Length: 398
Image (cartoon, rainbow, N blue to C red; front, side, top):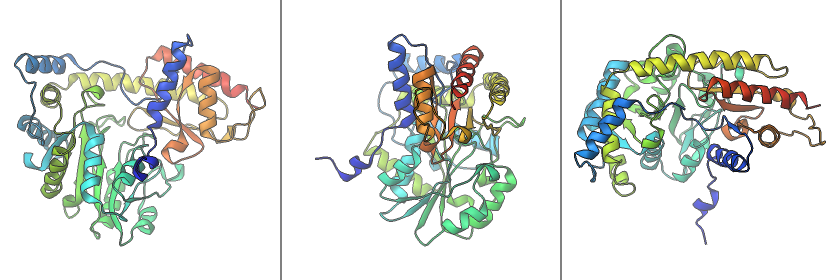
């Protein structure tokens, strides 16, 4: 009955884990969910006020499929201010989150049999989105020894006549790894000799911990490569607007126009008054961003300290986003008190949730076994509780 495409689809594992955590909570269990990637602070007041004003003014109808003119202009203005990259508003489209803009881009770029390079560890949705575009994911494994980042040496063997797209995500979900300007320049030197499109997923670009205001970008590193780069971003993480579903895609006008046409036949347009709130997010005062980033950095330091106190845990230091990719290889093959063997990261995560009420995402969902991803966008008190439970759980393994 179902199409082959539908049969291949898997539900989002992060949302599924969060749903299981909510089920346990409904039974009275005290569950700490570190599984979902969204900030725990509210959308900033000035943004909510702008959206309320738009509602009161009757901004409740369809907008152009490309998005309202003010928001497209605000997106490219922000790119000029933050990265000194110059684009025109007609090189920008607004979608229902960055997720949809990446989906749109893959749909309009890929033909059946095309290959899309996705470095692992990768965000869980990339491979499914590629397969839904009838393309093939090509997945180079980027181990801890190279900082979980793609290198020219790992990239070159993946490039074939069928390579159409490379997806880069920095700061990275799930590892928090951030590419340096030099690392991006080295990749650009390889890519500028090809016709490969680069979709740069920049959703965590303001969430870095080296004192900079924004992460380096591959489009800054090579003028020759820049026409091949598509910049996907959203207001979801930086401004805690995950539920507003506003994202953007910027780049080659032919691709943008095709994405707008595709969206006109699917989602039509992003929510009108939410777009107005996003304008305020990008053009309004940024002091709240600075404040929450300071708080996030403090949580990061605490959670790294707590994790380092747990014997057997490996803790690569994340330089961006709000995740820690925790190494648990030393526990694979060990037994629970009931005799059950921990065979992989999925079993580790499932047992941690059932036994101790802590939800994390197994590394296998990111294409990388022997790790789990945890988000630290919960209060310090709940983080402390979760780390205590994790320590207790691993102490029972033998």
